[in-house]
Image (cartoon, rainbow over all chains, first blue to last red; front, side, top):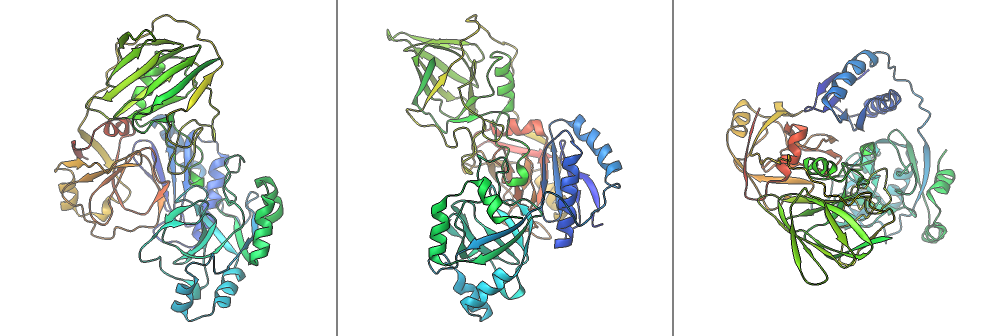
Length: 239
Length: 288
């Protein structure tokens, strides 16, 4: 167990601390504890996991105090096991065509590798979804192979196209919507990964596994034309 | 059917409620009204408000009744007039119900020595919730109407008003507060005792670069002795974070769900509504 302690976060918050480091093992424990906490049906407004913390937000001080006692007694019953029923495995098509791969040369130059190397390295790995943050549905995926690790852009872009796939430091991501941002953009996926009309809202949830596969521009356009509803995207691209 | 039309938007007119919860782990901010005290006050006058309130900042909107009749109530420190079709104008008080009939126009002037004002409507505004809430987060484009309202936007309310009797609450007291007792933030230990002492003893001015996401303050820089960059973690409204320039940011309702700046302190939950009402130029102090 990486769990360290539970601290108060203001009058209506608690912060479950897993230390200052970040790793996939820590994140797995966090995301399993996150599902365990959801199962406890605490009187909580929000439970927000991240790399090494889980923040709980309550609507009253009484509910916080009551839940803290319950958490203290329950957290010792929690055993991080490898399996969780709600976590999905995704195979996501991505087009690395030059028209989308705005910053792929940065990565090529930094590591002295070809464009095909970047694509192979990026698609060979099954990524782990650390958490969803920054903007609705934005997954922090990791970790990329060491020869893709690239710092953020020195000056962030004002507008990154929606559905862009990016790399920053050890992580890769998909931008759900148009946004400013500093990630190195290397590809684009052919469908939306966030949809408010579906109860899941975000295609990716914390703990999901994601692998990209390379598609041609014409395959990209074909998938884009289908405009599959969220329901069918889940069926088609996840296990 | 009862219909109303936005004939003047005022400033930053949005639909709000008490917030959208249970979605922060998907990157969805709670949002909701900046000043919960006023919503609670309005609830005591308009009981069946459907959780659909209008929020404005600084300058209030004008609303025209295009069909039927609507009962409304305005909360906040502002002047309120109803323009009748025969060109007579009647002044109304905040926290008092107003009966509006076809052709009437409700004109709300600017907020006095405060920022946000609200309008509640009996039976709401005929909107559908988005992820269980009517709150608007314009940055993420989430909400029943996921943008600030525009001239010409109209609302249609099917239900009839239950009672046209005058309703009011004269016990409402929305206080102004400039001195805030704060809790220790998760990264308080990033700052030296001297820096903490200075943060808690010098005033900070609210700058005009403030919005529903947060108040940017200006004053003695608060410099971390460790780093201004942490691994992003969950954020709550009222968190006071310190970016590398040392100028504190008080996060309000449209919080980024996670953030990577150290948080020196956190306001009491009830104080978020109070600090949100302070106009730019106000000088605030914090003490632990």
